[in-house]
Image 1 (cartoon, rainbow, N blue to C red):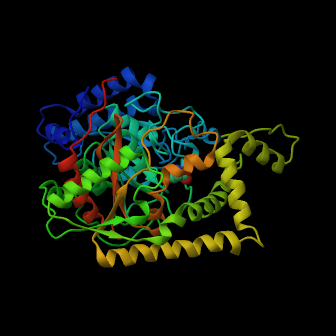
Image 2 (cartoon, rainbow, N blue to C red):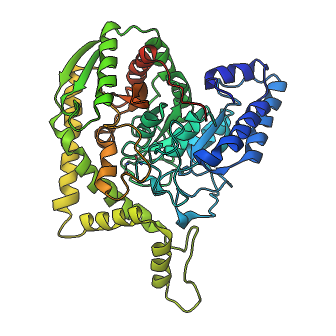
Length: 488
Ligand code: GLN
């Protein structure tokens, strides 16, 4: 088992102390050893990984100078299109689909010499907070296999915590990078919306979806961020600006000096309904940050409490439109096509068989919220709330550099304990959703344990100030340390 950071592994590969092929093989062996119990992966691409690793070694043989992550293995959420490699988004409706192209972030990772070991499990179409809505069965939290690894990107977070890969990719629409990071004791960053390309990401809610980096340390997360971020003409909402230097910011934060940094505590997220152990770990960390020189003030963001209901109108509305493309004609599954049935019947039979209950619930809610006569009352109203939330952020960032809160109100819950009531599942993202509605960056970094389970610390920053967020996150890591799960 390889426990080293991606940065250390990359340096060893570049120095020829170990070959990329050996590193890939060691991770593939670890996957064979533990993934029967963790189920982080939907598809392991051993052949592709070894081929990519051989290419890195060959380039190094020729004396080529490669990037800091060349030869480092990565696990990729199954919602990212990977050329020729099955991509299901956790849904039966895409079973067997092999994309004919790579997502932009995937091409950038390949160019940087990253070695993809496989595609990770997720809630169907990234809708969920536990991976229990995956059509292929849940993933299990390496800290306690009876508990959820978060969602929707639970597979990516579980792969990191189980040492199946040192790096992973997630996507965050309402918290799907940060919440799995929090409950598995790993790091996950949602970049500024538009900071990472959505081209080749299977769309859930296009005005919110943001691909981002996941790792076991802040520095590794920043290194991966640098590889995938940056303007992409193939994505119309991609921001044509240079990527902030997040690696330098992480290095600065790691020195443990926060002199001159102003941190805002969100009053509305100060613990009502949250697990006491989560709040205790969070408060201890805030206290430690003041010792590093940070000035901490309380900030009120009154509309954050309306983020959850606004999100559950906006995200389903956009998904009801985006998921119309899964019609049994263009991709994957087709049901009932016996040559006699009408096209409409085949489409509805395919969608009935291919989508799970949570996805259907959202399509129905979204279709209703967008329907004429209800549009203004639901979707329109939610968009207004979204504006108010963005204004709360803007007002807060006039006074402070970053906002902080726990990432989630509670730690990893037991499998099966929140599936019967959708609202209980939605609460997992109470603290993460406001950022998505605003569009700024946010990161979750481990800050201790509550009853033996990891707690996440969330840092939120203004749009395109991802570097600020990395600086504070690295400072948190410098006081809270990294977490090591019990041996599997
Ligand atoms: N858990 C939230 C949802 O179910 C967020 C999902 C996500 O970020 N993809 O929609």
